[in-house]
Length: 367
Image (cartoon, helix red, strand yellow):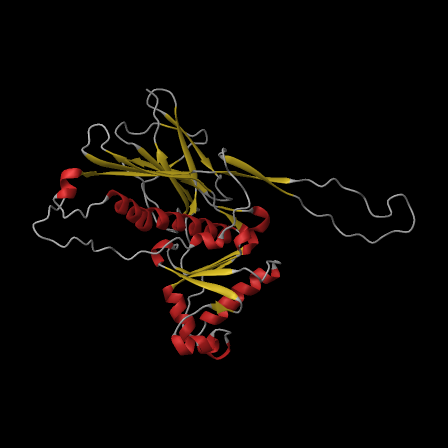
């Protein structure tokens, strides 16, 4: 609904917003300019041997180093569009400005969505590598749990310098109330004076709105070198009087993704009271008449299986939710969806049908 002015203020009551925070915890080492996929090589090391002073293999038996390839393919291609009618702008005290509306869209929708995606991928990688804890955070253990996280990264040779912790406001409050921190933490005196947190044991603390973090997050401790988050395209246009519209058409498109690198994956630690669903990449290709061929990556873990559900919109179960009414995905991926259904959701479940991973896509059905 467009609210036409009777006699309202010519000022817009703007909502509060926060700029991108996730970018600080990523690097731009790998370039995706002009390509959708980049292959990253990691090279292992050789074992140390005792030198033998006799024989032909005095240094040990030489083995050829085998490289490992991680394929990074950008999967996020997002867009938005809206119009502002010239008559509506004139009759709403001129507050419906296309340029300001575009800036508002980026601040309140596009940037938060990007941050949410990056934080989710980092948490997912940390859980997959066992770098996580579900210990409930209290005002008596917040500092201890944070120190345990820094210890885990240190034992995995992650550099001390440059680490960043993205935390919920609830965790920030808990650590400020924790007497063991207020008495010993390196930011304790500043905190006592003005109530702020800057660095904790050399780690920069960034407080993040809970809406951008995975459900139940206390904090994510990361080294920026572990994550690359390419923004391949960020294209925004304001069209003045396009065909069929007396006014403005605003369009935006963003191609981006986030990847935690295999060789640096131990540089990410997640502490949350609730696990998160890992992301599945789901693809639907038209098969024979009325059929669709579904492929899913990565495959289900040991003892788990893939199940699916079709409908008019994607399913949104929570982590560990018991899924009922879902169907086992056939090994060949061939399904016969209901003709009116447009979307398929695929979940990885354990032996108790508890959801562990989730993905969805638009259905393509053979004509």
